[in-house]
Image (cartoon, rainbow, N blue to C red):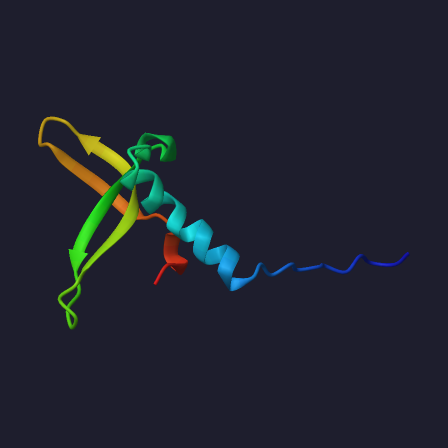
Length: 79
């Protein structure tokens, strides 16, 4: 009996860039609610001082303290 080989299909960097930018585009055109439990976070670069926007997942919202618990939208592999 032969074992099946795993085939890994690596998408092109252009396709990945479009997919990773999709949440930001949806938020900018007012369709951020399509992304589910995510919010758009803006931070300032440490060296460049330029604003950077990133979508983050909402883990929990404590309404009594008005506190959001968030995590990286792409998990531990995000940079």
